[in-house]
Length: 173
Image (cartoon, one colour):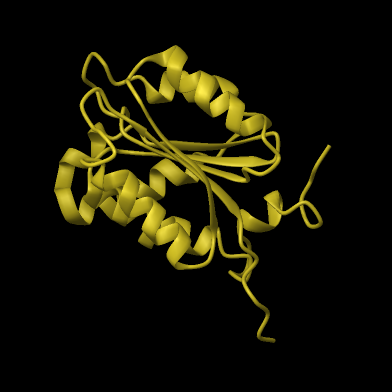
């Protein structure tokens, strides 16, 4: 059966104290990959690495019925300002434990043991799937190409996250 992919509404968040729209290569790479396969960009923002500003943007997107997927880049390391996991994880209804594990497996092939410093994570909140990737453009490519491209494709078997967030197919409460 050759069914079409169902496009999802995607929001991209870059967490950075220094990047601007002109210098945000990681966020732009995610936008290009998502829209390149047919998903709709609902919103894209850059916020400073502050728990409450990150949480405010992600919370608003979780509440927006047009946003089915949130992908963030940045703030997942161990420096003093890296706070994306602390900002976002409290919003999850369910954690996607395998995302961080799979990302570090793929990333390890590229950056070796340095991958253990990645605190990337994912979860589901209000029928919105949320993926938090590291800030490097390479890490965003790894995350999209190695995980998200398939998991956000409604045709991917045996299972995918697209079918959980598509209203007519998902588990909305």
